[in-house]
Image 1 (cartoon, helix red, strand yellow):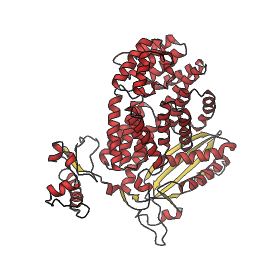
Image 2 (image 1 turned 60 degrees about the vertical axis):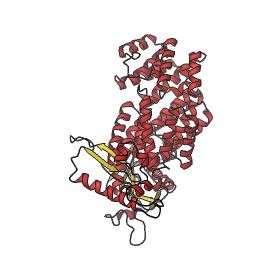
Image 3 (image 1 turned 90 degrees about the vertical axis):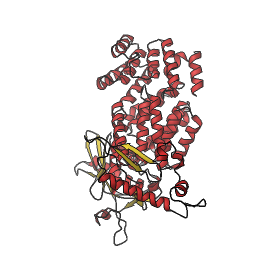
Image 4 (image 1 turned 120 degrees about the horizontal axis):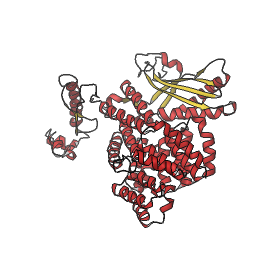
Length: 551
């Protein structure tokens, strides 16, 4: 504590503690003498015991994270229902083992529903095929779920591995639309996750839908901790409780609106206090901050810094976490460290295939107008989860930036098979319609979104842009004025204000906002070279100097 309070955390190494605190000689070898690790484990246990008993009302909580000798000092949340600080250690989340043992129960459909029955059979078959290929998962028979339910980490008497997780679901159809409900539960009855996939289909597309649902399912629930993916550890029942909450927070993040991302961030930050050694939670915090930074936040630089801190913690906990390295790539890109950002993305993909890693790398490539490479990774990501809202928004951006109009028409003709477009994707599609000479369609899309978003200025600014670019200038100016979108008080990034000013045919004001965005190092600025909205000022000296400085 003395070293920490004086800012000397770097001194808190095993050798230093052994020699200075425990009186070991200069030839002390921590590999041979484990006194520091042994005493640290005892200290963690004693701290946990204290804060759960006589110290349960203390305003300040001190705990020692597993694998670190630097004490963490936190305010205990107030007693009015706020989150409580915990001292969960890595040993409570994983134990030595061989991955996750999963039993698949056949998906069910109504007996008089031939389309749903065919789909249920196909999803079950495809899931079984894919499950055996997921790193960290061992598929066991359904009968194994019924043995020794009181001990989920035991083996059956006949040597057969007992399942820890059961995956099942139902399928029903109505008017050529299918609803697939999938559930994941522990064998002890704890429901970990439930997800619905709605899709339009017919008999000719059942096989394709089976593939899409099973791929999306597994991309969302597959193990991410490297200790599990490498069959070196098994989650405990304690971990499953946090895993369930993490999936709920990730589901909010996946929806991709400003409101749901903020809700997701709140949940992740609460969970981090409860399970500080669960790297997935820190990664979730980082991804939320990055998502907010990319959605017109005026404090985007601060959000990127917070994302960086959370991501570093995630990597410290699990150096081989795929999502942590891909998120780090996003953060480095916002800091304009292009070479190291690309190295982070490539490391993430070297560690394994993950939907988000391909999508994030594709966006990085899109910034640099490397369209063919970007499209390749977008296609891989879409194959892994075509239902993803973030994926749909990212692909919409790709078509707008790349100007691949033929492919865009084909994509939008089929994408609704996998559910409606999210708000962000709908607005980007409107820009593409303008680009293709269809402003009426763009205005209709913008008006439809306007009815849903209320007074959220981020969306209102984009809608005003669409109106202006569609020759509905009076509507655009009226909305801009009534919502105060270009005022100093508007909680929008200077980058978003620059886009709106340019759409309103005010290039000088747009360049002023871009210069301010550059000074603030805003998170959206790296898109400046690829974004077609700046075509009007590409030859301007100020614009070109900003592009050179950023890229």
